[in-house]
Length: 478
Image (cartoon, rainbow, N blue to C red; front, side, top):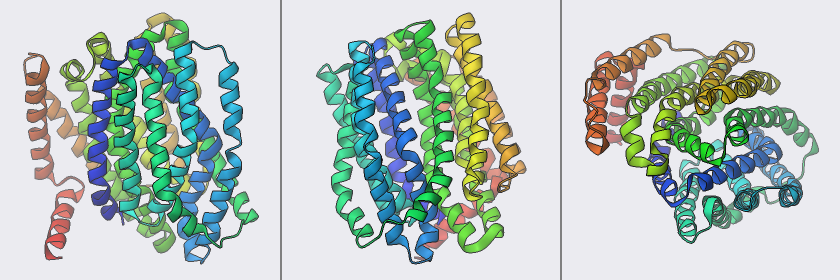
């Protein structure tokens, strides 16, 4: 199931990566630093409301589908989740009313309102996607990602050109999600038709999903506190610079982690539910190996090409500042991705999600304290120091606590091989002169990729070369 997901989700994740980079290219040029800051803050508010109100229900859809379907209760499960979602929608008018009354600048208020309105279609699309992923409907889940990614970018671009400012990308996201709802509505209603609202299921969903949602709120606090504090201690321009560099590094890594997580999360659940802990350990080791082999060189490579990449991808008003941010966020994004998409699986698999909340509280509290101390003293760099330190603490806390829930293996040999190969790659790339622009980026990326891939093929790290050959031969035989 894992490798089917890896292959099936690959095309849409390539598109997501390209669109993500184009988003940075376009909006850092069409929007001023202050407007880009409005977009960043509006997105943060949208994500916080979505997570606080709806995510526990979405998490329950993902985690319990395999077990309920095995018991013949999939229809009741789907009906219960959808009816719960309808009740939860009542929170959105309250959030919108608060935003209208809150004293914000006109541009920021419009961005916040646009984000809040878009929560409704986004959360329904997310429910549909989680059901498809849990049931192994790779193409259906990928379609939702594709429509939201490409449609949101295209519509946001049009609206930004019309002068909508920082609200433009958020309105585009909402409209694209609404289109997904139109495409998915009939199928989702069919999947729940005849199902009954099961109140004991709701209690199970709450007990499991609420700690997940609270932990994700802490994750959002961890990833967005710096922006609000930069706005408080500095200004909206600083938020825009920080978000531009943050997006360039983090979105590039996120594409890889989300791709592997979309395939890996349901596969781990299925391995545990159908094959027990022995099958889980084998599946987890394979996933962790692939994750390390792909993400370590990506993070190191981003740090090594930060200057020419920012020069090409980010508008002139923000490029220099973003280049300072990118290496730090590349390191932070690597730690965050390994924590979220691998080590946090221990808590959901073991259904000990209150421990997940504790694991997230450690970096969230540390990040708030460090930002309050370091931003007034060091400015933008203070936020970077705080972010990297906090994610490091979060990784350590998640590994330690996760072993008390459902121990997941760490492929130490693969970690050493990928880290060593990435270090040699960085050494080779550092010898390329800093000529700037596309020439420097192409030379460094080409040399780095060749060195790393050559070493990985030679070492057969994580036995992935052998596994890739098996998959190729199987597909050819089919």
